[in-house]
Amino acid sequence: MKKISFWALLLVVTLSLSLLAGCNGDRNEGSTTVEETTTVEETTTVEETTVVEETTFSEETTVSQQTTVAEDTTVIEETTVPEEPIVSDGWEFFSNGDGTYYVKLAGYPDGYPNIVVPALSPNGYKVTGIGEDGFLALKSLLSVVIPDSIENIDYSAFSGCIGIESITVDTNNKHYKSIDGNLYSKDGTVLIKYAVGKKDTKFIMPDSVTTIGYGAFLRGTSLTNITLSEGITSIPDFAFAHCENLESVTIPDGVTSVGNASFAYCKNLESVTIPDGVTSVGDSSFTYCESLVNVVLPDSITSIGISAFQHCTGLENINIPNGIESIVLTTFSDCTSLKKIIIPNGVTRIESWAFANCISLENIIIPDSVVSIDGGAFGGCTNISEIENGITYVDRWAIYGDENITEAVLRNNTVGIAGEAFMNCDELISITIPNNVKAIGDLAFYFCRKLENISVDPNNTHYKDVDGNLYSKDGSVLVRYACAKLNSSFEVLDGVKFIDPTAFAYGLNLTEITLPNSVYSIGADAFHGCKGLTKINIPDEIHEIGDRAFQFCTSLDNVYVGNGVERIGDRAFSDCYNMTCAVISDSVTSIGEHIFDNCGKLEKVYYTGTEAEWSKISMSDNGYLTYYVVFNYVPEE
Image (cartoon, rainbow, N blue to C red):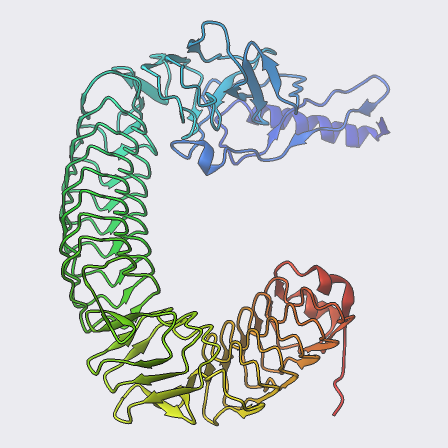
């Protein structure tokens, strides 16, 4: 107890009465709630008032993403809400922090598999919510009755309850209602959950519905036909996923987006017409729809997600809308029946495995707009590829080099070299690039440890060679150093601004590299595995050192990060076993993770700024740096 004066006591009592009076009206979830009344004792002492901090449901734990407190909320004097959950009769009760509770199943309550959600906690408080995975994904759960007290139901509450046949809501509930055993918002605009254990094969959505809940029909395996309300504007994530007997669905004209995995694993879905106005088709939206034969995509679509049509093994025809700029990862991979596809002029990139294992593809034309094809984009597409002199082509792009090829001379009409095209071609000694090549993908010559010479046609307008090394035509990018050259030292041409990713990777004979002041950025893995490298300068003009840029440079004994460097990427100097000294300048604002991992001889890292400046650097996991940094270092002239 704390002794207080008469005037202080009077002030506290007045304040407490004021707060109690204010509690009788409506309370928003963002308000602070006084949970205990102030008790005045005869000895002129007062218990400390306990204020419970703001407590709300997170966005993930509500369907409407709002919490509304009923108008008849009353103040309970001397309230003590246990912080630990209460377990009773198969239910677990969790405090909301405001004198109410939310519940989750903790076992099998009375009446299971037909259960009634409790309206009150064991200690007499109102239950207002059903929490995350509230029904424990119980496959044998058949019916649920929801009382009038429930105000919030987590979107995942019914996840995995694949046998549920009926959801009933007390008619006095102000937030929810049931129609034909399915769960809706009170105003009927949101279909929150369809009782997926029903045996009905058809479902017609009420006209009032404008929103479908996340995973609303997930695993509705009896449904063969669904008619959606014309008011629907989007198909949410997992909306109809695993409706394995669904044969047809008509998407209304007002829909603008089809969510992630929205029809995934609908194995009997035969056709889909997506209306004009839809702008995006989400990741895995139709993946494993094995009966899908035809899909019509409108030109309004500008984005098709990763794996959107992956493993649609029955798909024979599909059009790619004119608004698509990139065909992303695995979009059409394993579409083994796909025979024809037209890539519109406007697509600029085809990402890894986009058409992998489309073994029935008979013809494909890659438009001039494409400037990048990533590794494996057409892997396994044997019907559309041609092999000539150890090089595999798709249309006018070189896709693969035989692993035993020693000399690669590209066809004259070649316009691009795909990413990873010659990666791991351990016997490759030289490559000749014709004048039409306009694009060379990432890792195209990675791990070609015997490469001694790269030759470019002088008439090529995008690339050139200098001393057998590959540069952009304007000399601003060093694309690839022929890493098997016997030179021990190398000076990068003045004017080079960018060292491309993997440009010097595994240049095993190099011991010293000189970078000009023109260099602005060092790409990821640029010097990776240059095990003989003992010396390299990092000019002040360099702003970025990419991820793993010097990883496994095992002979590099010291490094001075120049005064202009702002970012050091992940593992930039890791596994430099013989490094003994590293200096980081105060210009650095971002440091990636584990930049000096496995640098066993490095005892200290010197920083030219103050400890306060160091603390402001955005830094990932770097346990070593936490203990070994020396601040205010002044480099020797």
